[in-house]
Length: 139
Image (cartoon, rainbow, N blue to C red; front, side, top):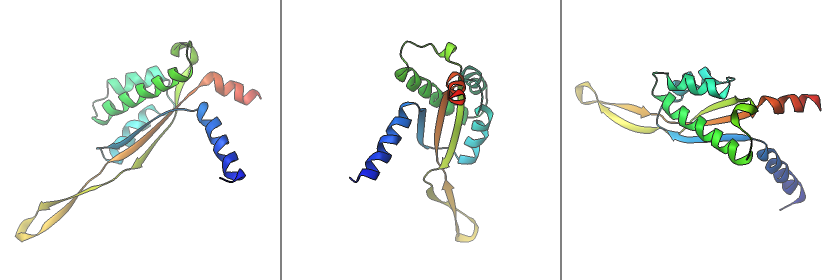
């Protein structure tokens, strides 16, 4: 590996130490429906986002709730001894990408067949602390 690639890889590793995220892959919901749920919680405080997801009637909100709890667990693994309530965690970024599409056939009139695309998505959820934001801006 060349020096430039090694330096870039080292910078990415250092940035990953301070990034708290969880990724959900191949979720069997369409990306459009998942974006409706993610728009509800982006920028919200973690506890408020959990409440929103818990009482939302959409099916995708259950999967997002588990993903948010996973991101909180990842944050706790990197910050042992610090309480979640005192850290002012919030949902910094939620990104939904299209996943693979399963192509299926559905019977149609007069001997034809229509193609049905069963879509899936990938969701990346990033948390951050408002305390860290204050420290970064003051430097």
